[in-house]
Length: 333
Ligand code: IPE
Ligand code: IPE
Ligand code: MG
Ligand code: MG
Image 1: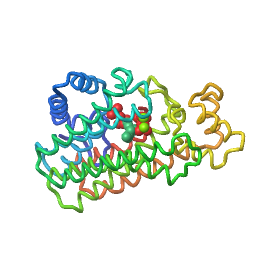
Image 2: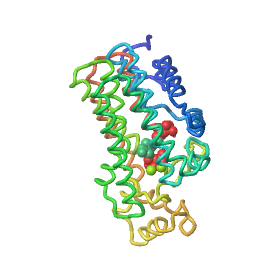
Image 3: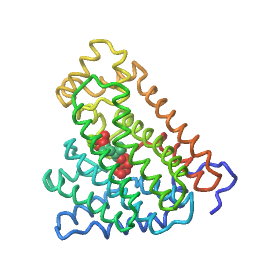
């Protein structure tokens, strides 16, 4: 497929086109693999699959794999596996966060209740590993298991910090490394492994995606303050309401007046914006230029991702991976 002169960036649609046939197979695989003898799981599987979602992680697996060679069955399979793991973490995450919406619809825990959701999440994790096991590749299984434990540890770490105002930038970075960047990195590495490349190339692609993942979560946490529920598919101001102090707020708190700090503490203690409206918190962030500062921080990671991927030979897939970095920082949901 030709995309004009060398160096031109690709649009989201062009990137999607590059992996469309494989992505179609991924959807098919996920659909086939989300059927259980327990009806609830099958219904939940269908609800999850039809609920949208950007499919960013399987796209990353596919782009990284195709960058290095033609798509093999293992590539499609691994792309399905990472989306299933991602979905399982979201199901459990929404139980933990008592979330009401996900992907613009009532979340699984709201429709089926916490008990069923926990079990469905467990089942989905195990099914993802079942599918991965079919490759008979211990390195892939090792990577997936280490990754899943890392993500669960991230969620536990976050749980310990809920409601606490004294969160440092370093604490925050460790958390997003575990809960988001590690999965992005795994996506790239699995793509590389499916193509059977050398370890150095796999590591380099993993670095690219890790940086991308950090930027992605930073942007997600910024959008939680700046976006609108209709666009985001989940409520805004949600992180603080859930007791999570994310980077924009960490920056603001560094130079906040005692009164401003007190307002943030009130929302953390109340778990709602009844006493302190969300707009008041936005004012604090704006006064300290914290959103811009967090955006600049995200840019440093996308820049690193760009530098790493620039070292790969020019190709349509390389340019697609390069363009993904812009799409991540410019996204609105
Ligand atoms: C949500 O990920 C969880 C985060 C890491 C912020 P996505 O924003 O990729 O979720 P979907 O799959 O598109 O719904
Ligand atoms: C995302 O965590 C879930 C994982 C990456 C495990 P969050 O709680 O921060 O994300 P949203 O806002 O619910 O998507
Ligand atoms: Mg959470
Ligand atoms: Mg959540």
